[in-house]
Amino acid sequence: MSKKFLQIKQDWLDRCVRCGSCRNVCPVFNATKEEPSVSRGKISLIDMIQKGYGKLDREAALLFKKCTTCLRCQEICAMDVPYEEIILKAREAATEKFGLFPQEKAVTSILKNENMLDGAGNLSRLAYLFLKPSKSPQNAVTRISIPGKGKAVVPAIKNGKFNYKDRLFPAMANKKAKLIYFPGCMFSRAYVDTSRNIIKVLNHLGYEVFVPSQIVCCGAPSLHAGDTKGFKKLREKNTEVLNTIEADGIVTGCATCCHNLKHNYNDLNKPVFQFLEIVVENLETLKNWKAKKPLKITWHHPCHIVRGQNIDKSTPRKIFETISGITYIEMQESDNCCGMGGSFKMIHPAISDKIQERKSLNIIATGADTVITECPGCIMNIAEGLENQKSNMPCKHTADILAECIGEGTNL
Ligand code: SF4
Ligand code: SF4
Image (tube, rainbow, N blue to C red; front, top):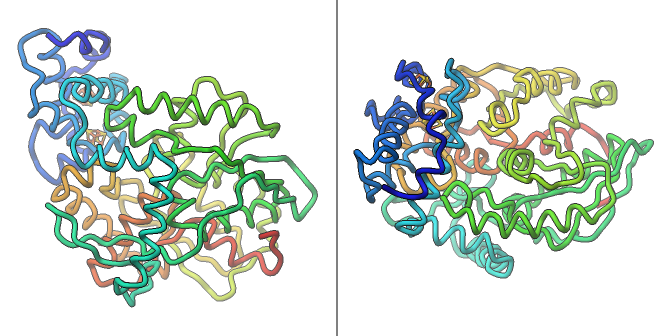
């Protein structure tokens, strides 16, 4: 019996009455129709291992990763089974025994090291000069070959670095508060323009924004891979930096960073906000903003916003329907996972592709001009799905659209 498994409270596992309701909502079960894919199946296996009737072997470790951690099962579970905590503890035990999967090891090693991250960003910019970016409007994406997956679509990194660290961007209206901007790895290296747009929008809404240096990856990829020690080191470093700066709160445009900072950073001394939580508090100001031309948008709810942070599903609609010239169209299954799930996409690419395809078809069926969301992983994965469907619809961040509606004036 694995010593680590004893740390999963038996009460959590016993709460599962095997009702099977989670099968109806699980995107992985929907794609595979295999019982071990759904939370009920994983909880049964963990229970058996914990009681000594099963073995923590490599097959079990692979099964623990067959989950996007979308939290749909946890949301509908009438027995309040804390599935996220159970699966993260199971992954931690498996990683301690077998180590990380090679794909996870490669990604988490880069994310844990700022110099390697900068190097990867520089290499990507260099690659942009030689690889042919797509002519579609999907944020100028590039197709590359990934072993075991075939062609993948990734953002073509053509813009400069996000080099605004240790800078204060003053409010452009009456100052309401000072916020620290936590960009996260993707918005400081890949989607740099989105970071600029987030700061621009916040300044126009009356927020002073400080961008600190010394911030590292929030650690979510390490935590979700089961590398809890690696996560704790990153958390310690970020907490020290964030607690030292005087400010009224921390804001991020990344759903996963925000979910992680809110739930797993126990010692932060200031509140954390998702970007759209700040924006929705300013609907009176938004009434004066206008789209340059009529725009039909649809919204994808990232799992780590709608369930991870319990942000009300009406929030994006409230924001975009306030802006003149924008029509909000609800998509079918708007809060279904896009199939990214961090390392899930790398470890189980065929299942991820099926989930992604369903999401892309739902998006296209809306007939919108643009799909909007607020997570860089979702943006990248949805752009790939739309590119695969030969759709002309771009996928953008909330701030990218809002920045176009403000008019002139920026501190950047
Ligand atoms: S919905 Fe909850 S109680 Fe029912 S099988 Fe799934 S995890 Fe168990
Ligand atoms: S978190 Fe999502 S993918 Fe994982 S078992 Fe639950 S519903 Fe399925």
